[in-house]
Image (cartoon, rainbow over all chains, first blue to last red):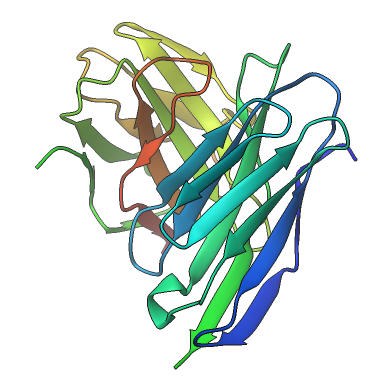
Length: 113
Length: 114
């Protein structure tokens, strides 16, 4: 994998469902991974910054895990609510790349009430 | 409230015209960034700055220029050399110029060509 890939591209769930999506990235020269939430008509908002293999972070009903050896991160949302509807962006920083963020295309989540 | 302010929200450019997008932050952040978003593509870095009076080209700097005369301000000029300027432009800042600091974003400017 040369780029950051996010799957699925879009997702529709019912209120109360739990869901998860994936961010895949090159495992070599890994430095850090960022997750952002971008609601329509608002600014992207940082959720997590993760650096260590095996990292797990949690913010309310949202949590994320990181596997730097195999090059993936999972974002979980427990008991989805309509206000969770947004695009979730993943980005990584690689060493030797001036530490610039490399962005995925995002996963668009729609939670139906 | 602390944050990043981008203006205008919508901007129209005529052929051959230069236009400037404003980005101001009151977060006391050292680093500031300009990204461009096009449909079906991830955010692409245009320019970034880690300190006043210094800035570096990102991945798609051609046809753009920036200045960083004040810590709070990082305006982006879209010049007439940018042949495909229609896009959504996002400004961001972070506490330090590298490592793991999260980005804080403005609300964006939609630029369209008349």
